[in-house]
Length: 319
Image (cartoon, rainbow, N blue to C red; front, top):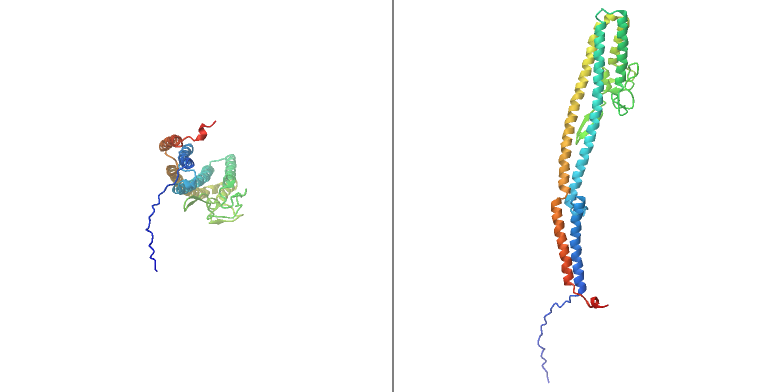
């Protein structure tokens, strides 16, 4: 005998979300929201206190990246400005020294011309020679002038004086010994005047060689003592030395003008980059105040709402 079994009818069950909401869940959600509101409030308070948009790179990586680049640019400009200031000071000392040399040579020419007119007594010639000797000594002292403890005419050997008392070179020096300062990206300039160009006649002078400029003074002194008639012929040599000095001064003056123009450009760049840095980093005070007030209102509203949502429990009525 065979039995036929029937399957029971298929019953479909509908699953419903009957998750239970507890007071702990309400409290946790409320605390999470309060914490977020409080963090945003603190953010704007920090902006107002520091005046900056961000306090950590993670706050805004783009702003932080731009800030780093702009700060580097401003720092470089500051270094170039210090270089131009130092270069200007060195060149001003050099120019002032050569100005005094010009006056010394001018005076030597005046007294040499006076002694060469043939109307002077022996006593007059003696007085002129004494003054010429003092001018020669002053010339040597000017040749050993210093700036911040460095000899300005000694080329690379700034720790050694250029001339000995007898007018010979104390150091080996060449016109190519140029001290260069970097005053911009890929922009440098020589700030010194090699003593070989100013005092010597050759492209390079070696230690022990007598300076041509000092030698002219010595020949004038010798003529004043032994052969006053030879003084007229020495006036041309004095003029040659004066023209050489003026040539060197003109070259230095051109470089000084260039450094001055560069310094002015760096001042403008410093202002512009500082503005860009401020625009990138500094917070808008009015906007920050408005945002802070909004977040404070939201935070206060969150506190009030939380007090209403969380109902008192039985514990509140005990005791």
